[in-house]
Length: 508
Image (tube, rainbow, N blue to C red; front, side, top):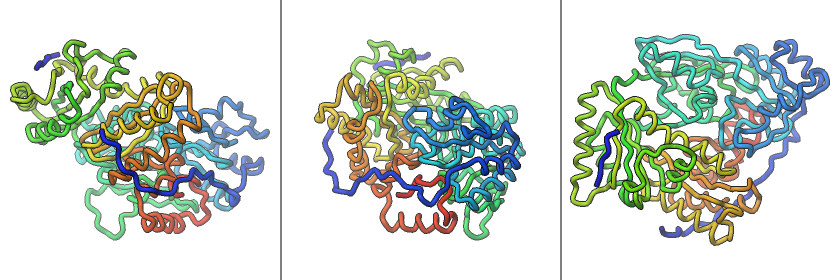
C-alpha cells in the first residue's frame, strides 16, 4: 500500500415512553388440523413443526425462532417453507380464514426483531424461493424470487459486468426480499441511491392471499399510485414480497480505496466536503470509524492498515472508495486529492494508505465490514441504527458513554464499550453499545428512551436502514408525528384488516 504522512450534553424534550408487549387475542394458534391443511399445499420437507403430526426436533426449529444476535426469541411452533408464489398465496388465504398470524422471514439477519415471532404466529420462510427469473444484460434489469441471497445474485450478474445496487455486510446470508422489506441501505447507497429508486417492480402476496403482480421491468411507468413503494420498508406488515424486479448498474471498470487517520472528529465534515468536491462522480463510499471501533478491529485481527506510530492519537478514521470507468483518470484524481490533503497549511489527516492491488483493496474493506463480527465477539451488542446530522455523530456516541458512566454501568461489569461507525455519505450512524456479560433489563432501561431522545432532539430518525420491527415499535413517535402514525395505521387497516401480517411490528 502507498503510505501517506503528515461534546455537549443535549437538552431533551419530554416524550412518553413505554415498551408494550402486544396481545394477540384476535389470533389463533396453529394446530394439528392446520398442519394437515398445509400438507396439502407443501411437501413434507417444507413443513417444520413441533406438533405431534410432524414432530420436528426443537433444535431444527430454533434457527427460525432466534435472531442471529441471540437477542430476540420467538415462540412459533411451526415453520413453512414454500417454493412458489402460488403456495404462498394458498397459505396466506388459509391463515386469513383461520386468523393465524404470519411472520415472513428472509435470511434472519435483521437487527430489530422484525422476522421473529412474538407469540403464536407461524413463520413463513422464503429461503426456498431462490430462483433468478430473468436478467437483461442490456437494460441491467434483474427479476428474481424474494428468497435469493444477495451475494448469489451478485455472482449471477457478475459475468454480465453488472453489480447489485446495494452491498451489505450480511450479503452472504441476507435475502433480497428481506432487503426490500426493510429498505436496506448499505455501503453503496451514496453512489446508487436507495431501493425506493432501484426497485422497478414487486410481486406481493396480500393479506387475503391475493397476488399483486406489479413485477414491471420498465424504468418509467407513471400510471397512477406507485403501490410498490408501500412494501419497500413495510417489513411484511402489508404483504409478503415474493418477487422483485431491480435495476442493476454496470460494474465499474476501476475501483480504488484509501484509508485515512484523522486527528479529531471535527475534521470529518471538512474532509467530506473536500473529497466530494475533488473526486466528484467517482466517489462511491465515505465510511466513518471511531477510534474505539478501530482499536477493537485490530484486537480481533483486522489490519493493521497503518502502523501504531503513524496512527498516534488519531481520534477517528475514514474509508473512501472510488468507482469509475478509467483507472488512470481515477488515480489522477485520487493522487491530486491526497497531495492537497497532505500539503494543506492545516492538514485534515494525520496519515493514510492508498490500495495498490485487489488484495490491499479488499483488506481495507475487510476492516470496515468486519466490525459487526468483532462486536459480537466482545459481548452482546445493543445496536442503534440511526440518522443524525453528520456533525453530531461523535456527540451522540459520547453522550451515550457519559450516560452509562453516570449510571455506574460502564466497565467490564456492564457496558464495556460504546462506539460508532457508519455511512457519512448518508448520515447513518451505527451506534454499538456492548454488554460484556449479556443483555440485562437495567442496561436497556438506561439506554432507552435516552438514545431515542438524543436522536429526536437532533431531528434525526430512530431507524436509518434496519427498520422498526418489534424493537423500535414504541419509539416510532420519536421520528413520526401522530398524524403520520395515524395514517400509517389507516394504510395497515386497508391492506390487513385482520392484522395477521407480521403483527406487533412497526406500528405501536
